[in-house]
Amino acid sequence: MDAKTQKSELTRAAIVGAALDLAAAEGLESITLQAVADRVGLSKSGVFSRAGSREALQKAVIEEFGRRFLADVFVPAMQHPKGLPRLNEIVRRWIARTRDVEAFTGCIYTAGAFELDDREGELRDLLHSEITRWRAALRRTVLQAIEAGHLPADTPQEQLVGEIYSMIMGLLHDVRFLRDPQAVPRTEASWARLVKSYQST
Image (cartoon, rainbow, N blue to C red; front, side, top):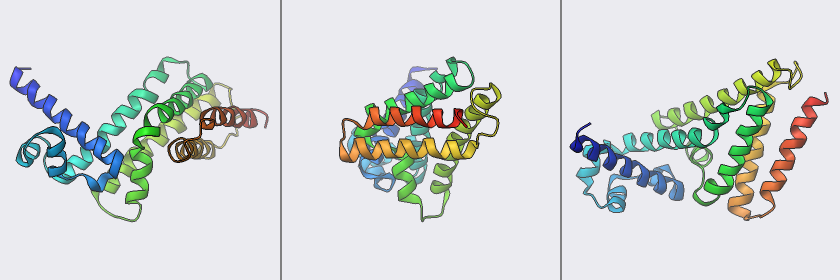
């Protein structure tokens, strides 16, 4: 990679990062080429030449959020054995990210879902696809826990995934809006009880 190409890629990464910060603070619809240009010190045309249209930049933000989220939560958990150890690590990391990141910046998956829930179009479709893909990864991990004998064979996979998701959304509400210092230990206790409830059936 030559220096010019590397500089261009670094500039684009800075543009997407600035747009992600803007979306986290004010929503995906707040992203405009001019608003991002002002944040990174470029002209509007300079942002367009590197990131494309407003919608292309919004899509890049959703994809970048997904990349960062998976890098923090899912990818490191793959180092743990399949089954409940891996599922526990995913949930542990998801709780930690919610506490350390989303509590201060908001969550594109959560806020974006409410922002785009009644709109049709490619942006909503992309966000829906990203969230669905994440839930499918969770469901596969639950299935592996069943196959490993860590959870009963009749464990309803989609039900457990939904309960995990709801638990984390509740945590996000409590740490970000209520600023409740007990939200994290309460969520950790909820997860332990949830696992135990399935194992005891």
